[in-house]
Image (cartoon, rainbow, N blue to C red; front, side, top):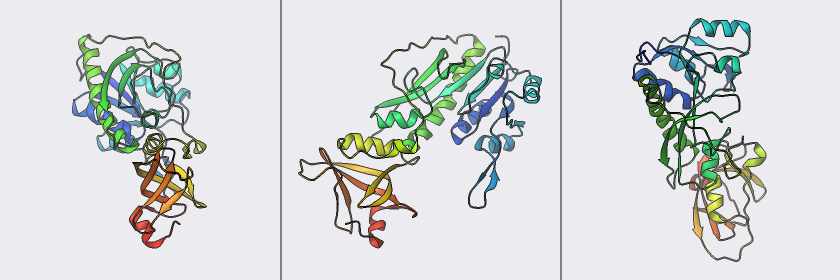
Length: 310
Protein backbone atom coordinates (compact mmCIF):
# COMPACT_ATOMS: atom_id res chain seq x y z
CA UNK A 1 0.00 0.00 0.00
CA UNK A 2 1.33 3.43 -0.93
CA UNK A 3 -0.35 5.27 1.96
CA UNK A 4 1.22 5.82 5.38
CA UNK A 5 -0.72 5.80 8.67
CA UNK A 6 -1.48 9.53 8.51
CA UNK A 7 -2.84 9.21 4.96
CA UNK A 8 -4.90 6.08 5.67
CA UNK A 9 -8.38 7.40 6.45
CA UNK A 10 -10.16 5.34 9.13
CA UNK A 11 -13.74 5.41 10.37
CA UNK A 12 -14.13 3.83 13.82
CA UNK A 13 -17.41 2.20 14.88
CA UNK A 14 -18.01 1.29 18.53
CA UNK A 15 -19.93 2.13 21.67
CA UNK A 16 -18.84 0.75 25.09
CA UNK A 17 -15.70 1.14 27.21
CA UNK A 18 -14.25 -2.00 25.61
CA UNK A 19 -14.03 -0.13 22.29
CA UNK A 20 -12.37 2.95 23.78
CA UNK A 21 -9.04 1.15 24.30
CA UNK A 22 -8.81 0.39 20.58
CA UNK A 23 -9.69 3.96 19.62
CA UNK A 24 -7.15 5.29 22.11
CA UNK A 25 -4.44 2.96 20.79
CA UNK A 26 -5.05 4.10 17.21
CA UNK A 27 -4.84 7.77 18.19
CA UNK A 28 -1.76 7.20 20.37
CA UNK A 29 -0.09 5.60 17.35
CA UNK A 30 -1.00 8.57 15.15
CA UNK A 31 -3.50 6.87 12.87
CA UNK A 32 -5.91 9.16 11.05
CA UNK A 33 -9.42 8.68 12.50
CA UNK A 34 -11.64 10.85 10.31
CA UNK A 35 -14.91 10.04 12.11
CA UNK A 36 -16.50 7.87 14.79
CA UNK A 37 -19.86 6.10 14.52
CA UNK A 38 -21.56 5.21 17.80
CA UNK A 39 -25.01 4.61 19.28
CA UNK A 40 -27.40 7.43 20.06
CA UNK A 41 -27.39 8.89 23.57
CA UNK A 42 -29.61 6.90 25.93
CA UNK A 43 -31.40 7.75 29.21
CA UNK A 44 -29.43 6.50 32.22
CA UNK A 45 -29.37 6.73 36.01
CA UNK A 46 -32.04 7.79 38.48
CA UNK A 47 -32.79 11.00 36.64
CA UNK A 48 -32.85 9.19 33.28
CA UNK A 49 -30.67 11.89 31.76
CA UNK A 50 -29.32 11.29 28.29
CA UNK A 51 -25.89 9.65 28.53
CA UNK A 52 -23.35 9.63 25.71
CA UNK A 53 -21.53 6.40 24.94
CA UNK A 54 -17.98 5.93 26.21
CA UNK A 55 -16.71 6.06 22.62
CA UNK A 56 -18.55 9.32 21.91
CA UNK A 57 -17.12 10.96 25.02
CA UNK A 58 -13.59 9.92 24.08
CA UNK A 59 -14.02 11.00 20.45
CA UNK A 60 -15.34 14.45 21.38
CA UNK A 61 -12.50 14.93 23.87
CA UNK A 62 -10.13 14.33 20.96
CA UNK A 63 -11.99 16.53 18.44
CA UNK A 64 -13.14 13.67 16.22
CA UNK A 65 -16.46 14.08 14.36
CA UNK A 66 -19.18 11.78 15.75
CA UNK A 67 -22.04 10.21 13.79
CA UNK A 68 -25.00 8.73 15.69
CA UNK A 69 -27.42 7.20 13.21
CA UNK A 70 -30.67 5.68 14.40
CA UNK A 71 -30.90 3.70 11.18
CA UNK A 72 -27.69 2.38 9.64
CA UNK A 73 -29.46 2.00 6.28
CA UNK A 74 -30.84 5.54 6.08
CA UNK A 75 -29.82 7.35 2.87
CA UNK A 76 -28.73 10.41 4.84
CA UNK A 77 -26.32 8.38 6.99
CA UNK A 78 -24.95 6.41 4.02
CA UNK A 79 -24.32 9.67 2.18
CA UNK A 80 -22.62 11.23 5.21
CA UNK A 81 -20.47 8.14 5.75
CA UNK A 82 -19.44 8.00 2.09
CA UNK A 83 -18.42 11.67 2.16
CA UNK A 84 -15.50 10.83 4.45
CA UNK A 85 -14.03 8.57 1.73
CA UNK A 86 -12.52 6.24 4.32
CA UNK A 87 -9.98 3.65 3.22
CA UNK A 88 -10.88 1.21 5.98
CA UNK A 89 -13.33 0.88 8.87
CA UNK A 90 -12.61 -0.56 12.32
CA UNK A 91 -15.54 -1.91 14.31
CA UNK A 92 -15.47 -2.91 17.99
CA UNK A 93 -18.50 -3.94 20.06
CA UNK A 94 -21.02 -2.27 17.77
CA UNK A 95 -24.29 -3.45 16.33
CA UNK A 96 -24.62 -5.57 13.20
CA UNK A 97 -23.70 -3.58 10.10
CA UNK A 98 -25.60 -3.75 6.81
CA UNK A 99 -23.54 -4.76 3.79
CA UNK A 100 -23.77 -1.27 2.30
CA UNK A 101 -21.82 -0.01 5.35
CA UNK A 102 -19.20 -2.72 5.92
CA UNK A 103 -18.38 -3.07 2.24
CA UNK A 104 -18.06 0.67 1.59
CA UNK A 105 -14.30 1.26 2.13
CA UNK A 106 -11.89 -0.14 -0.49
CA UNK A 107 -9.96 -2.02 2.25
CA UNK A 108 -13.19 -3.25 3.87
CA UNK A 109 -14.04 -3.34 7.58
CA UNK A 110 -11.87 -4.89 10.28
CA UNK A 111 -13.59 -6.26 13.39
CA UNK A 112 -12.03 -6.82 16.82
CA UNK A 113 -13.52 -9.84 18.61
CA UNK A 114 -12.79 -10.87 22.21
CA UNK A 115 -12.02 -14.54 21.56
CA UNK A 116 -9.75 -16.82 19.56
CA UNK A 117 -12.02 -17.40 16.59
CA UNK A 118 -13.56 -19.63 15.38
CA UNK A 119 -14.27 -20.49 19.04
CA UNK A 120 -16.68 -18.30 20.98
CA UNK A 121 -18.43 -16.61 18.11
CA UNK A 122 -21.38 -14.63 19.43
CA UNK A 123 -22.42 -11.90 21.84
CA UNK A 124 -20.79 -13.03 25.10
CA UNK A 125 -17.34 -14.54 24.42
CA UNK A 126 -15.73 -13.31 27.64
CA UNK A 127 -18.49 -14.74 29.84
CA UNK A 128 -18.56 -18.15 28.18
CA UNK A 129 -14.79 -18.62 28.14
CA UNK A 130 -14.71 -18.26 31.94
CA UNK A 131 -17.90 -20.27 32.50
CA UNK A 132 -16.38 -23.13 30.50
CA UNK A 133 -13.20 -23.08 32.56
CA UNK A 134 -10.86 -22.03 29.75
CA UNK A 135 -7.25 -21.32 30.70
CA UNK A 136 -6.68 -18.85 27.87
CA UNK A 137 -8.58 -16.38 25.75
CA UNK A 138 -7.51 -13.71 23.32
CA UNK A 139 -8.30 -11.21 20.61
CA UNK A 140 -8.94 -11.80 16.93
CA UNK A 141 -8.95 -9.18 14.19
CA UNK A 142 -10.86 -10.34 11.14
CA UNK A 143 -12.33 -9.01 7.91
CA UNK A 144 -16.05 -8.42 8.33
CA UNK A 145 -18.54 -10.14 6.07
CA UNK A 146 -22.28 -10.74 6.24
CA UNK A 147 -22.48 -13.77 8.56
CA UNK A 148 -21.60 -12.69 12.10
CA UNK A 149 -18.01 -13.37 13.27
CA UNK A 150 -17.22 -15.55 10.25
CA UNK A 151 -14.82 -13.42 8.18
CA UNK A 152 -11.21 -14.21 7.37
CA UNK A 153 -8.84 -14.02 10.37
CA UNK A 154 -6.14 -11.36 10.12
CA UNK A 155 -4.25 -11.60 13.44
CA UNK A 156 -4.71 -13.25 16.84
CA UNK A 157 -3.20 -12.66 20.26
CA UNK A 158 -3.54 -15.00 23.26
CA UNK A 159 -3.72 -14.11 26.95
CA UNK A 160 -3.99 -16.33 30.02
CA UNK A 161 -7.17 -16.50 32.10
CA UNK A 162 -6.00 -16.40 35.70
CA UNK A 163 -7.84 -18.42 38.42
CA UNK A 164 -9.18 -15.24 40.05
CA UNK A 165 -10.19 -13.51 36.81
CA UNK A 166 -13.84 -12.67 36.34
CA UNK A 167 -15.62 -11.04 33.40
CA UNK A 168 -14.63 -7.58 34.61
CA UNK A 169 -10.90 -8.24 34.91
CA UNK A 170 -10.67 -10.30 31.71
CA UNK A 171 -12.70 -7.64 29.86
CA UNK A 172 -10.15 -4.99 30.79
CA UNK A 173 -7.17 -7.15 29.80
CA UNK A 174 -8.74 -8.02 26.45
CA UNK A 175 -9.67 -4.40 25.75
CA UNK A 176 -6.01 -3.37 26.09
CA UNK A 177 -4.90 -6.36 24.01
CA UNK A 178 -7.44 -5.40 21.35
CA UNK A 179 -5.88 -1.96 21.10
CA UNK A 180 -2.43 -3.46 20.57
CA UNK A 181 -3.68 -5.94 17.97
CA UNK A 182 -5.59 -3.43 15.84
CA UNK A 183 -2.49 -1.23 15.67
CA UNK A 184 -0.43 -4.23 14.54
CA UNK A 185 -3.14 -5.23 12.05
CA UNK A 186 -3.30 -1.83 10.38
CA UNK A 187 0.49 -1.47 10.34
CA UNK A 188 0.73 -4.81 8.51
CA UNK A 189 -2.08 -3.71 6.18
CA UNK A 190 -0.03 -0.61 5.31
CA UNK A 191 3.27 -2.44 4.74
CA UNK A 192 1.59 -5.23 2.76
CA UNK A 193 2.54 -8.08 5.11
CA UNK A 194 -0.99 -8.86 6.36
CA UNK A 195 -2.18 -12.35 5.45
CA UNK A 196 -5.79 -13.54 5.65
CA UNK A 197 -6.76 -16.99 6.89
CA UNK A 198 -10.21 -18.48 6.40
CA UNK A 199 -11.95 -19.71 9.53
CA UNK A 200 -12.57 -23.46 9.75
CA UNK A 201 -15.96 -24.30 11.20
CA UNK A 202 -17.03 -27.62 12.70
CA UNK A 203 -19.26 -29.04 15.42
CA UNK A 204 -16.43 -28.74 17.96
CA UNK A 205 -16.40 -24.93 17.81
CA UNK A 206 -17.46 -23.42 21.15
CA UNK A 207 -20.28 -20.90 21.06
CA UNK A 208 -20.89 -17.64 22.94
CA UNK A 209 -24.62 -16.89 22.70
CA UNK A 210 -26.25 -13.89 24.32
CA UNK A 211 -26.99 -14.43 28.03
CA UNK A 212 -30.56 -14.00 29.23
CA UNK A 213 -31.86 -13.81 32.80
CA UNK A 214 -32.85 -17.48 32.77
CA UNK A 215 -29.23 -18.36 31.99
CA UNK A 216 -27.91 -16.73 35.19
CA UNK A 217 -29.44 -19.21 37.66
CA UNK A 218 -26.89 -21.32 39.58
CA UNK A 219 -27.28 -25.12 39.41
CA UNK A 220 -26.08 -26.40 42.80
CA UNK A 221 -26.05 -30.01 41.55
CA UNK A 222 -22.89 -29.26 39.56
CA UNK A 223 -19.43 -29.65 41.05
CA UNK A 224 -17.64 -26.87 42.90
CA UNK A 225 -15.30 -25.95 40.04
CA UNK A 226 -18.16 -25.64 37.54
CA UNK A 227 -20.20 -23.48 39.94
CA UNK A 228 -17.25 -21.26 40.81
CA UNK A 229 -16.45 -20.77 37.11
CA UNK A 230 -20.11 -19.99 36.43
CA UNK A 231 -20.15 -17.27 39.12
CA UNK A 232 -16.84 -15.82 37.83
CA UNK A 233 -18.22 -15.90 34.29
CA UNK A 234 -21.26 -13.87 35.33
CA UNK A 235 -19.42 -11.34 37.54
CA UNK A 236 -19.90 -8.43 37.72
CA UNK A 237 -22.52 -8.52 34.97
CA UNK A 238 -25.12 -9.91 34.53
CA UNK A 239 -24.36 -11.69 37.87
CA UNK A 240 -25.18 -15.27 38.84
CA UNK A 241 -28.42 -15.60 40.78
CA UNK A 242 -29.75 -18.04 43.34
CA UNK A 243 -32.29 -18.36 46.10
CA UNK A 244 -30.79 -18.84 49.56
CA UNK A 245 -33.35 -19.86 52.18
CA UNK A 246 -36.17 -18.17 50.30
CA UNK A 247 -34.40 -14.90 49.38
CA UNK A 248 -32.97 -14.08 45.95
CA UNK A 249 -29.28 -13.14 45.85
CA UNK A 250 -26.71 -12.25 43.23
CA UNK A 251 -23.29 -13.78 43.88
CA UNK A 252 -20.14 -12.03 42.68
CA UNK A 253 -17.17 -13.76 44.29
CA UNK A 254 -16.79 -17.25 45.72
CA UNK A 255 -14.15 -19.81 46.52
CA UNK A 256 -14.07 -23.60 46.50
CA UNK A 257 -13.96 -25.84 49.58
CA UNK A 258 -13.47 -29.47 48.60
CA UNK A 259 -15.19 -31.77 51.08
CA UNK A 260 -16.84 -35.20 50.94
CA UNK A 261 -19.95 -34.22 52.88
CA UNK A 262 -23.42 -35.69 53.25
CA UNK A 263 -25.35 -32.41 52.98
CA UNK A 264 -28.12 -31.98 50.44
CA UNK A 265 -27.08 -30.11 47.29
CA UNK A 266 -27.91 -26.41 47.70
CA UNK A 267 -28.05 -26.52 51.51
CA UNK A 268 -26.93 -23.21 53.06
CA UNK A 269 -24.60 -23.28 56.08
CA UNK A 270 -23.44 -20.27 58.09
CA UNK A 271 -22.33 -19.17 61.54
CA UNK A 272 -24.21 -15.87 60.87
CA UNK A 273 -20.95 -14.06 61.66
CA UNK A 274 -18.19 -14.70 59.18
CA UNK A 275 -19.13 -17.23 56.51
CA UNK A 276 -21.88 -18.49 54.23
CA UNK A 277 -21.34 -21.64 52.22
CA UNK A 278 -23.53 -23.77 49.99
CA UNK A 279 -23.26 -27.52 49.47
CA UNK A 280 -22.55 -28.89 46.01
CA UNK A 281 -21.66 -32.39 44.84
CA UNK A 282 -17.96 -32.46 45.76
CA UNK A 283 -17.71 -29.82 48.46
CA UNK A 284 -18.93 -26.33 49.25
CA UNK A 285 -18.98 -22.93 47.61
CA UNK A 286 -17.90 -20.25 50.08
CA UNK A 287 -19.62 -16.96 49.29
CA UNK A 288 -17.36 -13.92 49.59
CA UNK A 289 -19.41 -11.17 47.90
CA UNK A 290 -23.17 -11.04 47.40
CA UNK A 291 -26.17 -8.77 46.90
CA UNK A 292 -29.58 -9.39 48.42
CA UNK A 293 -32.52 -8.42 46.21
CA UNK A 294 -33.20 -4.70 46.60
CA UNK A 295 -29.99 -4.06 48.58
CA UNK A 296 -26.43 -3.05 47.72
CA UNK A 297 -23.53 -5.37 46.99
CA UNK A 298 -21.58 -6.39 50.15
CA UNK A 299 -18.81 -8.69 51.28
CA UNK A 300 -20.09 -11.59 53.39
CA UNK A 301 -18.89 -10.25 56.76
CA UNK A 302 -20.65 -6.90 56.27
CA UNK A 303 -23.83 -8.65 55.14
CA UNK A 304 -23.89 -10.90 58.22
CA UNK A 305 -23.53 -7.94 60.60
CA UNK A 306 -27.08 -6.96 59.77
CA UNK A 307 -28.63 -10.18 58.50
CA UNK A 308 -28.97 -13.80 59.57
CA UNK A 309 -28.89 -16.27 56.70
CA UNK A 310 -29.81 -19.42 58.66
